[in-house]
Length: 223
Ligand code: DC
Image (cartoon, rainbow, N blue to C red; front, side, top):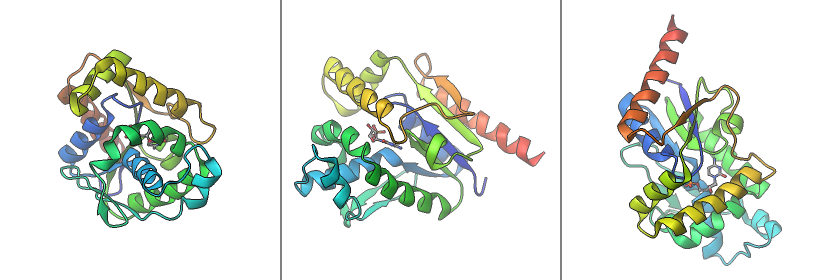
């Protein structure tokens, strides 16, 4: 599994993050949360008073923040200009601004370079996001697309982050619309991806399904 890449895409609340971390931990792989990188970029833009209604203003500064991601699935970290941003990137302000910032091509190009550097920098890795199987790692031997009913996604997110389920569902669906509709690297099911609707399964069940798929793929490649 030394250079294996497992690409996991899907909308927010589909179970992507918990599944990706669990699979990486079970298989001894590294873990990269690319959504956290887009959130970190957004947080930096908000902290530097960049006009988020102006894609050119965002693009002009996309090269500035130093974003560093730790890849231990048991303790994933994210820092911006050396400062821990793990709590700040989950704020309502960032939730509301991250999709428009992520739609700016210069932001995507900058983070694509960083993501590919991290993937290449070590041993096998589980990478989660929206465009991993389609753009970031199209040659990944294992690609998953996780989905779940909007009600289930909102309930999971509200249970994790607190807050009202109906408001959480509205915010999730608003982000889905932007993430799926943008011109550059939209959320999509990549060619060759295995689709798992996680609605009826527990987290452990989904992790076991993905681990089995990864092991089957590795054994097939070895055979
Ligand atoms: O996975 P998440 O909800 O933390 O992601 C936050 C936002 O980042 C999401 O609304 C869209 C964007 N994103 C993206 O455009 N491409 C990725 N590979 C990962 C996230």
